Length: 168
Image (tube, rainbow, N blue to C red):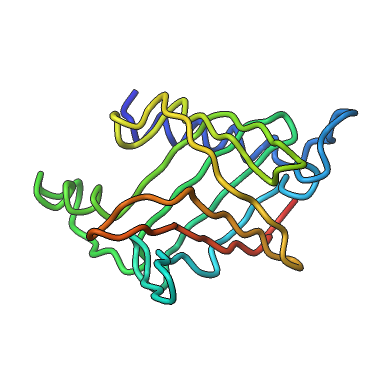
């Protein structure tokens, strides 16, 4: 099975369980994040500077969290050029460079507002199996995810994405 087909199967399986009932003992934040989310804004921040993140000013990103502790996401640039049939190797490489997909598991540290995400499958094979920690916060009906600081262009930056719920 190809990577795209494998990712699609995993995402479809995740979608079918996204409406599950939370088991007893789930954290407060986990109860709030379970569902399907669409990106409202995705930016890199350094001091007072904000710049669009990887997939432009209007990314077409979706993020899904299940009550069982599974996540799945697909991030893409909104305006991606289409091509005929399967396209050339160059066209497929260009399409791959404007998307990211992953599925895996997550756990929540409620008191710290942190989520630990382990990517079991990732469109970039170098990130498969990687684990990242993110700050999570509910702001009204939005979920805000913030990375730990990282170096870019000789400065310290954080990635921040704001999501709006589209389903439970």
